[in-house]
Image (cartoon, rainbow, N blue to C red; front, side, top):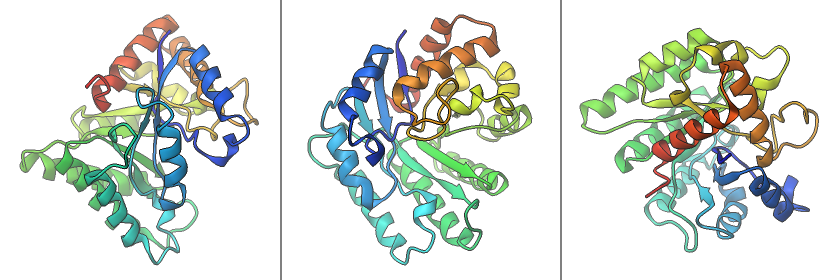
Length: 273
């Protein structure tokens, strides 16, 4: 099977002792590409260093994570840095495949809703201007995120531009899937990760209704580790467990899921260009 991990933080310090080995394990599981979302300037150098290891396999994104805005008086400077890198990527890395990860996260604090929303809208418009997809992080903010996406999707369309991307770490129910798909007219995919393997997973009840064309596979490593490794550090090789679980829920062969989700990733992120 050929797989793509569409959301991997393999540059995180959790892999400092065995990053090369983790990359090899991923290759042995058929993970042909890893997409690397940005967080903020504190981790940019680690992200770029990893991306330089293999331009054809390790594909970076650029964006400002919503929780990096909280309690950060310099978040607008961070946004300016995102825009700078999108205009002029660092040497030695593949072109940024998306603006991400961006979004809204009110889980830790609801004191920065206005700042997060401003930064989110700003980055959505950057993506539309550059015809890049977005990787959207949402936690405890689904209603607010949906309102922004609906408005910005329409704005982009009226301007003759596209707003498309992935709802990263989608863990909601079938009703939310249907609503978001209608809201974005099918221009967004849904990132399914290790949560789908959990015993009381809500998204596992939604997957049977989801079209395979709408699904991307991801790990969000080192977080959200799938069964049977739950409780340990996640890594990109474990995307194969998610693939098998989605196949089980859809009643199809894992190879079918691998083929379709890989095609979805290539289409959305323009990976064959």
